[in-house]
Amino acid sequence: MINSSLVMPVIAVATVATVIFIALGFLPRPSRATAIWSAGFAIAMVGAYVWLAHEMLDSEPLRALGSALVIAPMPLMWSGLRAYRGLERQFVVLSATFVVVMPLFLVATMYFGVYGIGFRVLFSSTAVFAVLMLVELVRLGPHLRDEALPLMAVSAAFLVFALITIINGVLVANGTIGGADSLQFLRTLNMIGITVYITCNLVTCLLLTTRAGDTTLSPRNTFDSTVRNRLNRAEAASDPWWSLLDIRLDDPDDIRSASSSAGFNSISERFGRDVDAALPADADIEQLSATRFIALVPRAQGGVREVVTDLLERVSTIDDRQPVPIRMSASVGWTQVPVAGYDLDDLLASASAAAEIAQRAGGNRWERVRETTP
Image 1 (cartoon, one colour):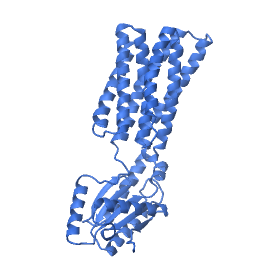
Image 2 (tube, one colour):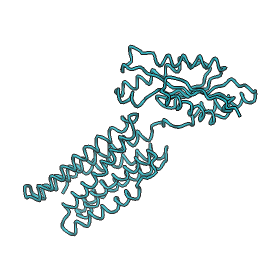
Image 3 (tube, rainbow, N blue to C red):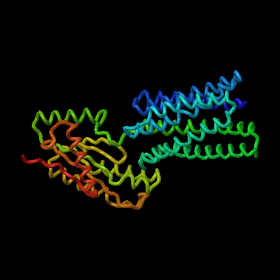
Image 4 (cartoon, rainbow, N blue to C red):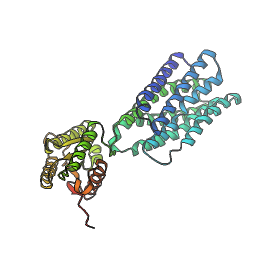
């Protein structure tokens, strides 16, 4: 029988992880990804309590069921990552099928006297999803490296545990070690590993969920209401001297890969200071991410051109104090109300498209949306 001192941490961690993620992740930011992750945490929690029931009742089928339930949700976490990335194929049905079939499979092995083999098969097959999860985490990109790191590390450790499980099974089959002692060792290792895995999974999923998106075109809070009010009043007064700027640091993923977390944070903070220093005091500025700003500037075309030129020069100037000795640059998408109109959403879309053109052209430049002649 497993030492109960190892069971209680699994129960505590699984319960706390489920409560925290639902309260801080799913409820404030409901989405397909957070719903899938919440289900995964909840299933692992149920498995932990089933494990406790085995401790109290000394029921072998409950032990098998609990052991499977705490491992089986891993495919759901993988499906949640695919949903987070916005992929069309998320394989939720496959993951849910695994969650249902594998516990039934492991319980069935109890009645056929092959539980040791069944447990090793379950653990080894789950390692396939650990590999798939590593692939999805890498595909999140360098800008999410810090958030993905805890789950990447523990998924890699899971592969090591799976290899140990396979080697252990081979040694048992050869008669090198005893089957009962070997299985007891695997159960203890499994319980310790599950505690660590749930914790790291919670950290990564919660960081990904609560992280502000980089690609949204919908500014929030006071900026949104203030800018829309200014544009409405400008339209009523037929005031054409308003421009929207979409300001982006060039090659943020490359900078992130070439620097440490602290170094990248220092670079992004400097970029923000450059934006604040270059834009006029009466401009409305919103930071969408560490490397992207939008700003509504009340200036004529010539005045905006001077502002943008000064901004690009500031960003490209090498600072002796910067942690990464590279020359930075920025791209600016520039649109005006006579071209895109006074609707904020139209201005945002127009400026965003111009900024993308500037970046594709090599960066370190601005692209102004011009009126098309009929």
